[in-house]
Image 1: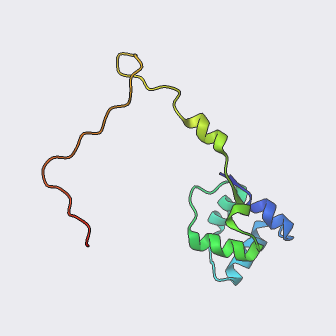
Image 2 (image 1 turned 120 degrees about the vertical axis):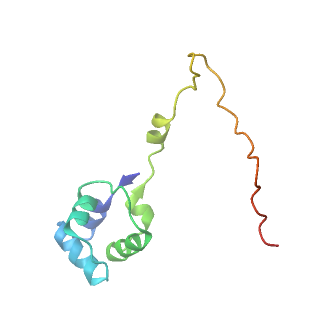
Length: 108
């Protein structure tokens, strides 16, 4: 995902992370300076949905404005072929059924 927080903030006249942090606090989201710095500087490794809601309120945008999918990065991570130990191409191993105590059935 491409993280566009700084671009969306700039569109709203927010040029500094400290200003963004103040606006988030005004909406009830108190975050540390370190967390704000990681959001501001690049793509955060994680973000809570509650935090995303507040960011969207402050910036008057939707999550899709902040995060843009990058399918080419996913394709680049996909293995080109599956190899066995001896180096020959082979299909992935099949999943064997679990024996022993079966799982309970869902309620009716």
